[in-house]
Length: 420
Image 1 (cartoon, rainbow, N blue to C red):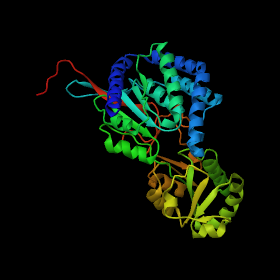
Image 2 (tube, rainbow, N blue to C red):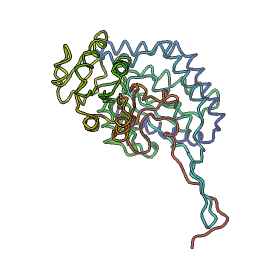
Image 3 (cartoon, rainbow, N blue to C red):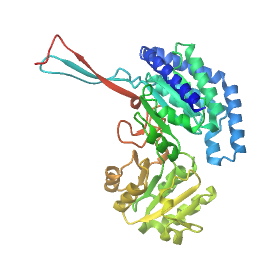
Image 4 (cartoon, helix red, strand yellow):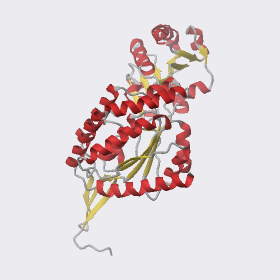
């Protein structure tokens, strides 16, 4: 079986490489027409997609899958329409391929240009969310990249239905064959085979749990862009508008607790902790949020449990919130830089100096001032559908849109120059 999986994935790679050579020939107008055809096919395949998703959800329920994971997995008609609309949104976005990033001349008359180009073949490994199948494929396609998708076993039927619709619909408008391929195997070893296929794969992007990402990083022979845990913080400074702070925390924790940009930890200045805890505990009570706090928080917050050290490092993805007192903005920054996953962190304050210090010193992909962490999202940033939220520092950081799926090359035009 291992040899069979290895050979099948190698074949996917070969075909993706061929497709990538054809994709670079497409004009922006051709790519946009193909995207519109994909969106139409997704709408036309709604019944088939929902039927496949029902199979996935029923299987997951039988297997005792946790509710947050089920919420990520489940699709309805509105969700299918959102997938189609996201494709149309990407069609409207500027095409970064061919953009001239720099243009200069040398004293010897050589003209140099730095130009955006596709990366080539991109592998995407992800779990749970079927919409990622479309988001990843269309963003890679818009930037001229072929895509090999490897979704989780829990969503295999949904992923297959969506990927097939994208390729089928796209081909009606000129999409090269094998531009979008889905690995049919859900075995963990398929991840290893894909990550070692450096002769065909130029980049791999894992989206999922920490164990999946660490597995990919440990075996990958090509660059990896990581989407690590979302241990996101909101720091309530002593000069915060407390009602604003409460609203932002409730939105960040309760709107979609299973999202990677949901709030997992609240830090509050000690001098306002009692007042703020009384307010926030009352407002959070109807939402059923479990609180795990330090000794000072437990003292002021009815029903709060004493937090462990690990609680402040945990991405709960559930209605659980850790809360800790800090002495000032410097203390808050030290905690965030030591405990966060460098994903999304926010400060709530009316003090410009404190906010600017927070902006400057917090080492995270996205840092907010007086706004919900839930805004760390490609769509909210105006990027269209996102490929993920990178917690790396090189090449891509934060929500990854179209430019982050490009490389660049240098074009040099001469008139017969030779080097002395």
